Length: 301
Ligand code: SF4
Ligand code: SF4
Image (cartoon, rainbow, N blue to C red; front, side):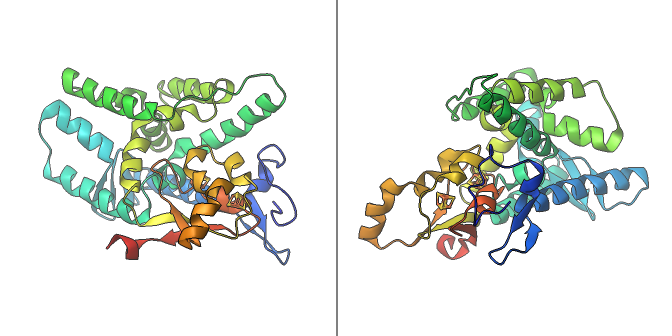
C-alpha cells in the first residue's frame, strides 16, 4: 500500500498489497496486518510443536493452555464452566485471572485480531465479500451490532440450563485451534459454514454479531490500557471507516465533532469502543498519521 499517495480502501487495494506499507520516504515496511498474521501463525505453530515434538512451550489450545507452565484459560469458557457446574478448579481461576490481567493491559478484543486463528480466515472472507458486493453479485447486509450481547447471554443461559458448555460445539475459534494442534475433525464443516455466511451473506458476521468469545474480550477492552489514539491531523477522509469492520467505534473521526473539540481544545482522543479489535487496519491506511497505538495507563490510574 502507498497510503501517502493513494486512498487505500478495500476495493482499491489488492489483498496482497495490504501486507506492506510505504513510509513517507518510500521505504516498504510490514503493515500491521502482516505483523498480526505472523503472530497468529507463530502462536499456533508453538501449539502444534508443543504437542507434536513435545516442545512444552505453549501447550493446549486457545480454550485452555499452558505457556511455560503458566495456565491460561479463555474467560468465556470459565464463565460457562461455572454456570454449568457451579464449581471452578483453582487452576482455572489462576488461568483466567492471568488472561484478565493480560488483556486489561493489551486491549481486550486484541485477542480477535492478534491471536484468533479464525480472524485470518475472516479477513480473507471479508475481501471476497467486498468484491462480490462491488460487482453487485450480492447485497451488503448490516444489522445492529449490539445483537452480540444477546447471543452472549443466550449461550450462557444454555450452559446454565443444560449443564454443558453448549457454545463450545459452535465455537469456530476452539474448533480451529484444536484442529491445528490435533488434526482434522468433522467439526471443521461448521467453520466452512460460518465462513460462507461471512462471504455470501454479511461482512464478518460471526465476529461482528455472534462470537461471545470476542464479546467477552470486548467487555475487558472497555477498561484496557492499550487503545487506538486519534489526533487532529485527521482530515475526515473516512478511509479508516471503509477498512474497519467495526467502524461504529471510529465515530470520533467524523468532522461533525470538530466544533466540540475546538471549544474544549481537544487535540487527541482514544477510541474506547469495546468492539475495536486493535487490528490496526485503520493505522495502516491513514494517510494523515492521525491514528496510532497509545497507552492510556495514566488516565486509568
Ligand atoms: S483518522 Fe485518518 S483515515 Fe480516518 S478519517 Fe481521519 S485522516 Fe482519514
Ligand atoms: S478502529 Fe482500527 S483497530 Fe479498531 S477495529 Fe477498526 S480498524 Fe481495527
